[in-house]
Image (cartoon, rainbow, N blue to C red; front, side, top):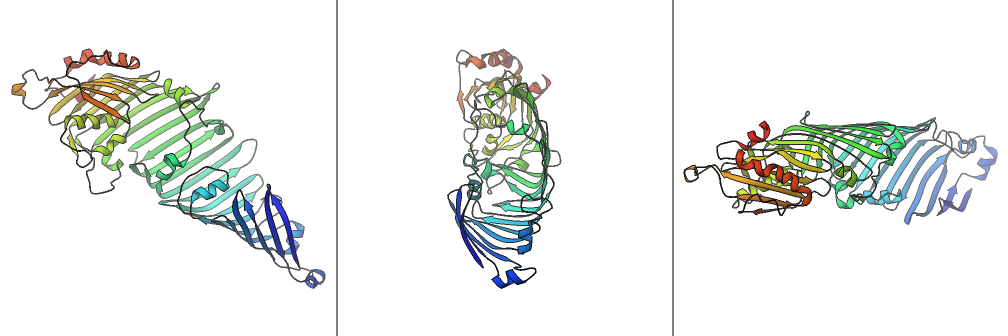
Length: 473
């Protein structure tokens, strides 16, 4: 017995072909047709789709309880295998299924699910699906794509508010394909933050990673814990036996969002920077402690209302160009670069004795009330200025004191004044032989520059450690 028919699923057309046993089996046997062959062809959101395999027995299908499935589903170049038992046909209560899927790129399967994920990497995954009354469990998950893998369980509970618990582990997690410009649309500065989904579900998330990589940087022994409760998200990230610690809280604030961030670390930057070749590599101990808070519905509003403080201290070591990508640390790298004009930091590392930075943030403007200090083998540097948190614009001024050749410079003061403008991502440096003039400063930064301009000459010399000056003040 064979049945052919046309059908639609969510307005998508399919041709279905079902083949059972003989008519005599159907009419005469008490339990006919142990299996029914299934073949379907059609399209799913523009991609060719097919389903092949078998279901049965017929008695289970007629009763609507406990039919067995063994199906291979092709969606474009993506293949999904489903085997197991459906407890009933109208929901997944008490069902037990094994699902396996693979494909040449994640972008294709994301498009089939209505998602925009431009990641051109092959993938494969498998899991056990267990259904229950108002619950859905994905257990024994094993997934890999590119250089990443993940395993664990995801439990979902349905009710007035959906509740999700995920416990996952990874040996290697490469986030670069997902954090690039092609991995999705990043909201503009003034666009509403996509946080309304936090109000629709509760749950917890726990992820451990042997090694996680993002951009030019990577961490070992990472752990990420997050809880979501009535719209408030508490996230904690740790790495390298607590060498890096980040705590983030996002909570509703009237009709806006309040964001509180605390970042603390005590590590060697050689551990953070990924080595791609045998070229130069930074090796600098760093201590960082920062707290920031802001309120708003967009990134622009959050940064514009930011308050808090940030302190960064670098010890003796060697720096190269790779550190310029780190927020704020790039300020030190660019100072070292201008003080060593004959050194190409892309091909070799330069020595650093210490560096210290302290910023006080109010209404989105970070000013260096204690200053920014740096010491190399040849120079002491002290300065300060301001950073616009909303735009990343910088307006920093520095004075140098030469540590060598003191016999020719009895006052311990040099005539170099360094001006750093532009943005944190693209700083523009120049030597200003005039003075620490502030007439040309941006209006938003004038206060920050005025704050340090009259202090530098009194505190800087070739005999004092500028890092101590910053930290003691």
